[in-house]
Length: 124
Image 1 (cartoon, rainbow, N blue to C red):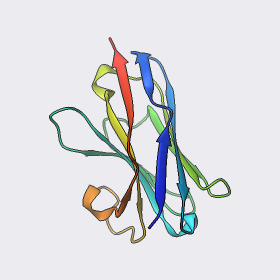
Image 2 (image 1 turned 45 degrees about the vertical axis):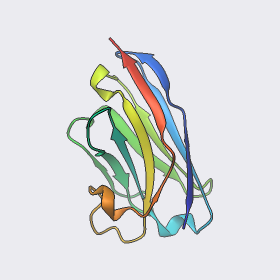
Image 3 (image 1 turned 135 degrees about the vertical axis):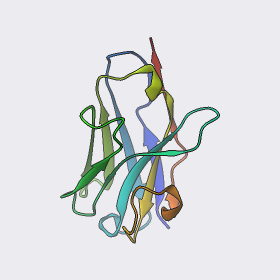
Image 4 (image 1 turned 120 degrees about the vertical axis):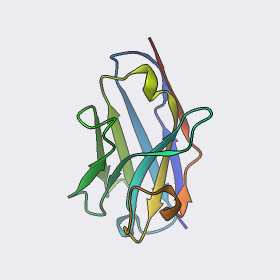
């Protein structure tokens, strides 16, 4: 099991930027594919972005492609989500998640370990 702690959420105006961080501990970080998901009130948790173990490959939901960038620093056992051109519809709790298999990085149930989430609120 890997422990995950997100930070960096907050309130921002539409068009602004935020950078989320997720610090991992407890297991070998480079064994894990990492993902970001989000959940808005009354909605299901949805895929935002994922990154492979080396960081060589990244994946994005269509709704954030071109605006969000995922990255990882294996030396710091951390993964990041740079969010630019934020929109009110990006408002949600954002979760960091870890998966060892990499079978389907778009599916929340494939991820075994989750952080507690960080709130992102975008005002119009």
